Length: 440
Image (cartoon, rainbow, N blue to C red; front, side, top):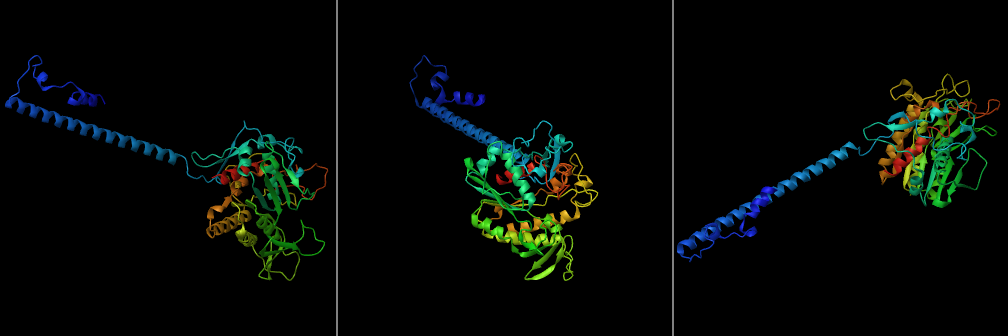
């Protein structure tokens, strides 16, 4: 800019410029004549032309300088935006060591842990190291923050959330309540001493209500015979009739619904659709000689999700969150014939053990496809959110109670549990994902 100042300083406007002084005649007073007047006019014209040239040069330079810097600023902003992904696929990633991070809670600080998932109490081996991992989504700059209980409660202040599904839905809600216990403990509304039932909790300070609705199939069901055991015996499942609990969810005006369900379709079920028996699925037809048509379990899961999502069309809340299947991890057998889950660390994403088993992969595909269909057919597709935990949880065979959900001498129906998740444990990452998705 120095050359601009010099040019401006030499112009008549910014100096004591005088044609007589410039000619070296400061002491003399020249009498103007026609010749001098002509010379004066020429000099003034030249001076004016010079001034105009300088001003044009200044304007041109300033314009280019501004344009150059604007381009640089835009380029810098674009570069910054491109280095931070507009959206991360948080379902794809790796469990990475996080040795410095303590557990969010313990069985001493959270009173909401189901005793069968209290792996601390029953001495699950290597639990200390099992808890020292965090979920890291793939992609540069794609990080999942640790759960912020205060931020979650601010988000749901004066709102309500329904967890709709099976016992893993209850497992998820209990994990969330433990995570929130660092800020506030809820009180149970109409306390119940039951497992397979609907239960509701209220956070007074934030006016937030969380409820788990027991809907193991998401559609209407009943036992095939009187006196049968809910856990073991065959069920009638009506694939085109939503579970009555879904009507309660819609009528109650919940703000958020977290929907899940699949694992009960691996049990013996007789499937009904359109007023007729469609066939049987899961563990067989329960000895009913009149039902011989086999229906793949994933087809039943697909139909049940379609029915449940249609039932939620009248839902006027903020979000419907579809959570995908969380795989069990029985190895060397099933839950009833010696299978167990003895791993003590996550597997890597590229390992064969990180691939979903055939049944769970089919369940996952059915859930995702029905989610997409529901979102595509909605007035506001953004109201549907996919909480895809299948891949990340397939890597965590170390996160189940296994045989450490009770004392060795105790006789329990579900002696080795490789379905539910230790609290605290990898399931706590689900609420990290949930908070991330609800604040996107």
